[in-house]
Length: 285
Image 1 (tube, rainbow, N blue to C red):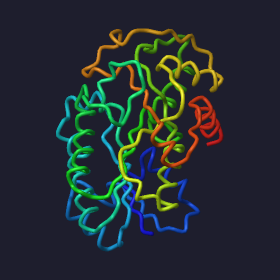
Image 2 (image 1 turned 60 degrees about the horizontal axis):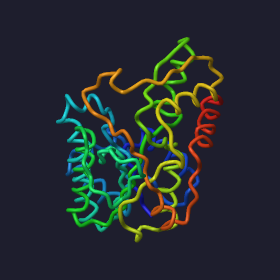
Image 3 (image 1 turned 30 degrees about the vertical axis):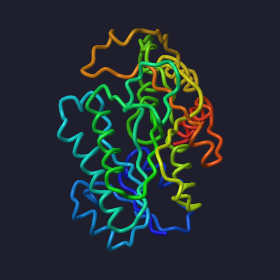
Image 4 (image 1 turned 90 degrees about the horizontal axis):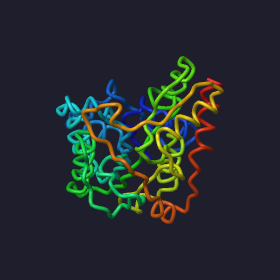
């Protein structure tokens, strides 16, 4: 099987590299230097030359605040590039595996978000990611969309690494407690995608929600990161309005994982257990 992975230098892309290192399938890992997914002809040429059967799109514009001032770039990567990949998947009869976000929801209910819920993004990031999802559905290609949340890993910039640094440098810190969700270890998300490609489960098309199990606020998450990292910092809860932002974020975006667990017969790790693994990975790096 020939599998194209885009955004391969990001958090999830690097996690996919680890997952696939001993695979008998052929994975073509690309980032913008090897393949400009905003160029439809470049995408088509790669699909043709490498006889791609599955696309795994790990590329995304994820700077939520910056997106409010940079709609053009966010839309190009989160929407138009996805449209190009979906069109190529349709043309070459490939399956498109795409990663989306909890930010497609408004996040104003206090129960886990189901795949069947109406979407209502609050900002440019969520809106462009939703437009990307919709372009896949319109294309008529074979697809699996995995919506995830609060992604972190040992790679690149993320909340875990930022909190490790801040709690080692500062004596005290404020972190919001009125935004609730569930962190996702990129290695865990990579494993479900890897399961789909390796076990050829591409016929199980649809939209799925995947994050680690459990519920926490950013405050709870920060406290756990600090403790596991062996840092000593007085972390205090605060309201979101104490940190003015150009975009309103969902207050409750816990994802309901019932569908993905039932469909793929998987057990999802609790967020604290996966965080421990990531912290150990960072310590050993």
